[in-house]
Image (cartoon, rainbow, N blue to C red; front, side, top):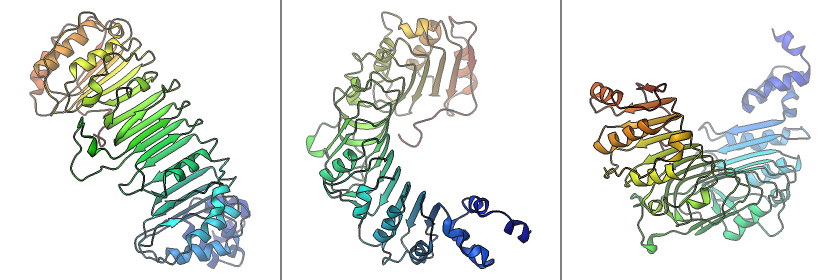
Length: 430
C-alpha cells in the first residue's frame, strides 16, 4: 500500500493532503525522503489550536519551511492557551508576500489586541478576509484592496470610525459583508457605505445584560446609529440591532431581508425594504405605526413573527399592500397580546388572486386566531396548501376538528397538521 501511494505523482498527493489537517500533512515528512518536501507545496494551510498551546510555535516554524510560491488560503486560530509570543504580523506578511487569496485570522488568546501588518492594506490578491476577536482594525489613508469580494468582521475592535470607512471604501468590488459587533469595539456610529455590496449580515451586541425594551424612546439609552448606504444590495440580515437604526436608501434591488430584533427603527425603516421579494420580519412596536402605508409591490414570500405587539392590524395592512404575495407564514409567540379582530372592509388582493401556500406556526386557537384563520381560508381563492402547526399545550384533536370545519373557498386546497413544526427561521434569533 505504501509503495502504491508513493508511486502517485506529487500533484495528486498534494490534492489528497488538502483534505487532511495541516499538522497531519506536515507529519508525513517522517515517511521517507521523498515525502519530506511534498507538504511544503500545499496551496492551503490551516492552523487551529486544539488546546495544547503549542500551535503558535508550529505555525511559525512550518510557515518558514513552506515553499509554495502561491498561497491560496491561510487559516490561523489561536486559543486562550496559545503562547502570546507568536509573531502574528510576521505570519500574515509571509502570506501576503505569496499572494494569499483567502485569509482567516481568529485570535482568542490572552495577548493584547493585535494589528494586522501594513502589507495587508495593499494586498491586491486578497479575495476573502475573515478577522475575528482580538484584532484591531487600524486602517491608514493609503489602503487598496482591489480584489476583496468577501469580508467578515467578527467581534473585532476599531481604532475609530475612519478606519472602518477606510477599510470599506478601499474594497471597490466588495460583494459580501458580515459584521458581528462586541460591546467595546470603540465605535458609536457604524456606517456601511459600499456601492458594490450585494449581501450584508449585521448583528450588534446587547448594550447591557438586561433585555432591551422594544419601543423605549429614552434617547439616553441609545448606543449609537447604524447607517446603511448600499444601493446594489439584494440580501440583508439585521439581527439584534440595538442602535438607532436608519436605512437611508430605498434599496431597489433588494430580494431578501431577514429582520429580527431591530429595537429602534426610524419611521422610514419599513419603506427602505419596500422592494423586497422575500421578507422575514420580527415585528416590533416602533414598526407598527408605519406598517399601513408601505407598498410591497414585489413581495412574494412573507414570514411574519409576532412577539409582544398588537399584530393583527399590522398583518392586514401588510396583506393589503402586498398584491403579489404567494407564500405566507405566521409565527405567533405565547406572549403575543390578543388584540380584537376587526375584519377589513375589502379583501386583500393577494388573497383573492395569488396566495398559494399558508403556514401558521404555534397556533393556539384563541378567538382572534380563529377569526383570522377562518378569514384567510374563506377568501384565499388560489390556495393550494394550508399548514397549521398546533401548539402542544392545546387540545390537538379538538383544534383540528374546529379548523377542518372552517369553510374554504379553494376546495382543492390541502389542509395539513404536521406533527413537527417547520420553517422556524427565527428560532434562535428572537
